[in-house]
Length: 427
Image (cartoon, rainbow, N blue to C red; front, side):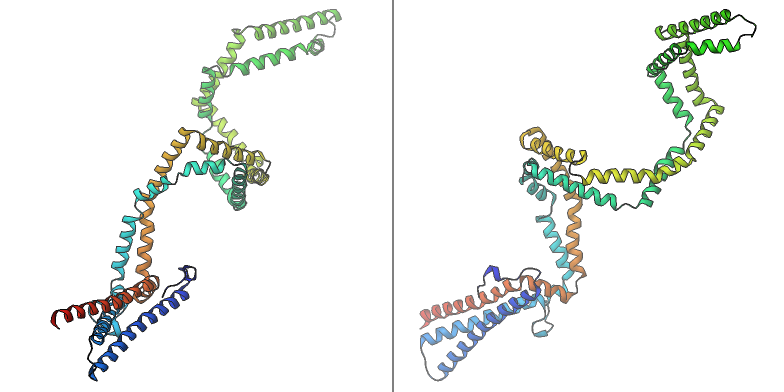
């Protein structure tokens, strides 16, 4: 009756389970047949006048063994089908009560295995953050994670259609940029920059640049004045006027550049502030900005942006994901090593990770356990009654045959014990 554990069929080996169950049924039924043969033999001997206490003892044991074996055969068989196909009440329990069994089984699994507290406790007992940290802290494993991340990124990027990406960029980026008025937000931004003094460095740089350019324009200014002076004017007068104009221009540029409170600077600031106000409140200015926006957004350059943007971005991302020496791959490996060491050595980081893991596990258990249990219940309910009975019998039928075996043996021993007691009391 015993079988080597390595020879037992796996759960997916249905043919093997059927063969094992059949072998156990034959063996237990054969034992019942042996009991019947012993009973008949002893009964025949007694009918022939061979009266002896030993024959009576054996006959009583065999008779009780038959009764026990038949009773347990009836009990086991009644779980899965009608014994001898006779529709006896309260038999074929599993086919008739399949749905109730499904509900009871799912409730049992839910209450004892897949409840949130049990799952959370099991996960926390596994010391996951420390183990993950120890694994990530090894350079080979960090490189492996980087490689896998690169592979996932490559599959994701290559799986995106260029046409879909172009439509997404056009609808979610370009169209959304073009949808609102540009003037008011630009005006508010410029107004904030002016108030915070953020435009002053730009004004300073522009004035310095203008002063440097003026310093390089002496000959140009003199020639321009010379060309505009009357032909009859003496040459020295032309040169004097040109030099004077240049010196005045250079002095003015120097004063503006070196005096932070120069009126020219204040005028520039006032003009910028007025321009920011016009962008927000002047209908004509807002309309002009909208016209510029329409020209920009309808230009061929912008129209081609949607098509070219994804091609350039995807190409760059693919190169970074596939190249082991890329900054992206190196950064991923570096982060794995860094966080792996933190999870192992830094108690605060590990405690925070355990806290987050507990929350995540609890959330998943609260929201996912019922779905998993529901799969068990729904699967059993979809089974045909006979099919369900067969599947369950294949899973537990071998063990149930030991009930028949034990019933036969215990019945025989009980019968012999009762016969002995009776013999001692009344003989």
